[in-house]
Image (cartoon, rainbow, N blue to C red; front, side, top):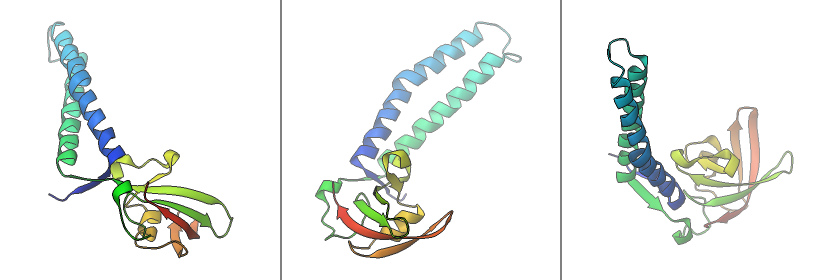
Length: 158
């Protein structure tokens, strides 16, 4: 099994979700199944079918999270020493060369990516273009609206 890169924040999110599923969601599903069973005939019981589907989803997600966490390579950006290079977990200040707009992104794992929080997946086009580059470099990113050029203003490990 390959390792799954995660920041400390991302690993915490997955652990919290796993804890919630195991301690709360499992109990809710078990109670829903018991309630549906008490209604009699299971062959035509929509509540029972829905509860069993929910149980399958919850158990599948628990297995998925446990697998990811067991294969996780947790990376603390504060301990990185990449000599100014853009790497996984680094935070990058960029300037769009066409519009002059400045933006900051942190490169994170797939499960913790959230554009609203300026966290981009390591597999995204912008992250792939940035990895291995240094402050002062200009990168071209193939965006849905067409190619865009960004200058790397600063690389931080925070």
